[in-house]
Length: 230
Ligand SMILES: *Cc1c(COP(=O)(O)O)cnc(C)c1O
Image (cartoon, rainbow, N blue to C red; front, side, top):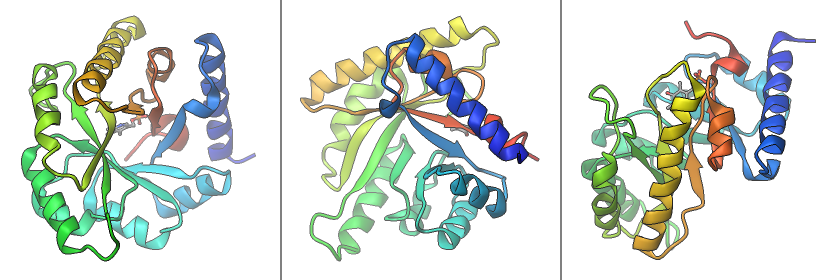
C-alpha cells in the first residue's frame, strides 16, 4: 500500500471516530486536503482515492495546479492581496480567507465586470483572528458583526460561514475553547444577518477532533495526509 493511501485512510478513520464520539454525521464534515507546497503528482494520487476538495494558500501555485486539474474542487485558504482578485474570481469554490474590505471590494468589482452568467457570485468565508494574534490575518472577533454587515453591500459575495486558524497549543482542550468561541460567533452572526451560515471551517492536522466536537463543517488537513512540507 502506498504511503499516501495509508495516511489518507488513517485520517478518514480518525474523522469517523471523532464523528461517532461527538454525535456528528460524517457527511456533515467535509475534508479539505491542504496541498500547499506539495506536488501535483501527490494531489493526483490523493484525488485517485476519491478526495475531491483541496485547499491552497498561495495564489500563483494554486492557479498552476487548478489549470492542471480544473475538475477538482479548490478552496483558497491563505492571505490574498486585493490586486490578485482579478486572477482568482471563479477559480475557487470558496475563498475561505476573506478578511479585508479591499479584497471584498476588488472581488465584487471583478465579478460585476466579468459577468457572463446572470447572478454570478463567489462563495466566501470570513476569516476570524480568534486568538487575536498579531502575526495572523482575520477579522477580530469583536469586529466580526460590523465587518459582515458591511459585506452585505456586495451582493456578489455570498457569505457561507467562518474560518479560523487558532493559536497553536499542545493541549487540545485549550484549542477547543477557540473552536467553541467560533461556534458561538457563528450563531450570533446568523441572528444578526438573518440568514443561515452553513460553514465553520476549522481544525487542522493537530486538532481536528476537537473542531469536529464544536461543529466544524470543514476540516483542513495537510500534514496528516501529505506528510511534512518542505
Ligand atoms: C497549512 C494550513 C492548513 C493545514 O495544516 P496542517 O497542520 O498541515 O494540517 C490548514 N489551514 C490553513 C489556513 C493552512 O495554512
